[in-house]
Length: 137
Length: 137
DNA sequence: TCTTGATCCCGTAGTGACTACGGGTTGCAG
DNA sequence: CTGCAACCCGTAGTCACTACGGGATCAAGA
Image (tube, rainbow over all chains, first blue to last red; front, side, top):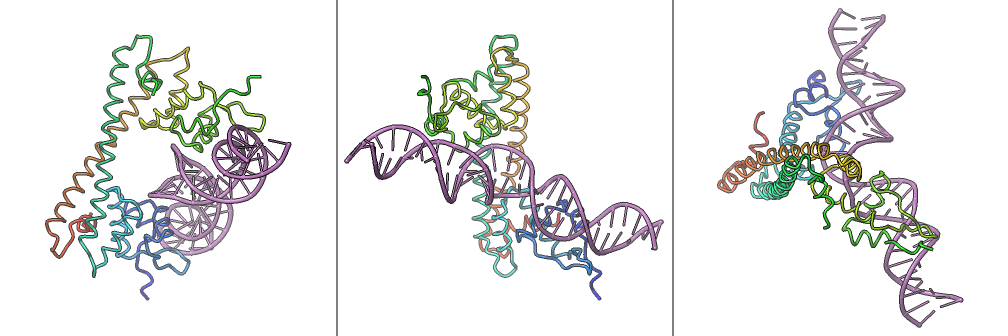
């Protein structure tokens, strides 16, 4: 009887660094397949599940959204791993990341300059941060 | 009877560039004070509301969260505008922004390198993006 | 004055990607 | 065989909105 093999969800969570509740969530939304169960109904995961979860985790760390990961997982199937399609998804995401960086860098310059002025005029009657926020558009 | 003055919520939304539903949301969560009403119950906004909403909008654009804005609004009261407290909030936020930038820049390097390799090996048997995601931890 | 159509009302539910809670069941070590 | 950790499931909460729906109100034109 091969029913004894497999990791419990808690063990998988510990090994993968993914929250237990998050694993169940991934199952609910169809990102992780339903694993086998013990007689009592506890989930039992096999190595393939662990690999898939690791893939998902790394993709999340790289900032891919759930839909992007779903697409990547589809393309990662052994038989039709179309590098071109994968590259499109990844470079779209790369573009998003670059846009976000540019936005944040602009923000950083504004905030840093304003906070710096604020420090200089610590005893001054007005606050440069509030001035920034209150300035007429 | 001074009940005629004021902007409707739609006008305020148009002038401020803040979504009408968002203005009502700000009122629900206590970020915007309740305005006066017409006899029929429509909101009527005065210049002070418009200024406060502009403040909120600019702070949101700078990435402050609702709680941060709430704190800033408290400190922006005319009598006790403590520049020091304001500076603390703003520089905390600045630190968050810098951390986010650093994370995204790391991400960008990984993605850009991988996508580039992917382009090079367009006809190769494996895909560098998938390799990245599938690599043993 | 009446009608029409734009605007506004309110409450509720949905978004993304989880996280937390609570009350009940199962598994396993001692 | 007992006790308690781990697991089950469904639901609700998070953040900062956005969308929807069915009804009321407003202002302008005929």
